[in-house]
Image (cartoon, rainbow, N blue to C red; front, top):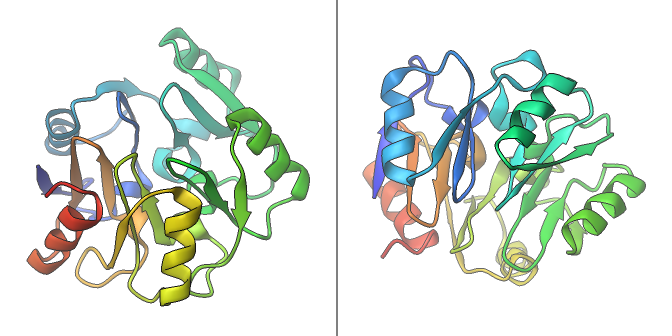
Length: 220
């Protein structure tokens, strides 16, 4: 199932919320329509938290099966909230605090902004037990903004070359699709919240874009 929604009228819902297979990280001011769409479509437990004392949960956090990667600028109280929910927290000490714009994790491995510090890359690899490929995609170093993955498939910017598409398939261990969302934007992760059960996309997303989401995330 795929639904359209917005965050108080803003179609870039991926800036504000982060989701995994089992939980969602909602900012405390999330609007009811979007909250309901995410919970019902993705079948996730809601967790209400403002990461780094902001509402940009989707920019800062990378949610995995039972772990969240957070920038080290987060407060102890924020970490405590997640740990009390049984979620492991791995703090990443980097100047690239918008982790979700800089990292994408797939079934087999992941991609990371090539500008991120080598010791940070190694620490994440050790924590997750995977290898991260430091690459640009469509000339963007912020690979997490132009590639979005679940455990069933991935979406990436329509500007990616055939060579880049094959690289992402191999690195993530997934099949996917090139597309735009929200009527033409190539920054995929800013416009979608998805897991293996469904997706919520920005309200400007067109029918053609929805069809590509269905294909890329293996809903059909």
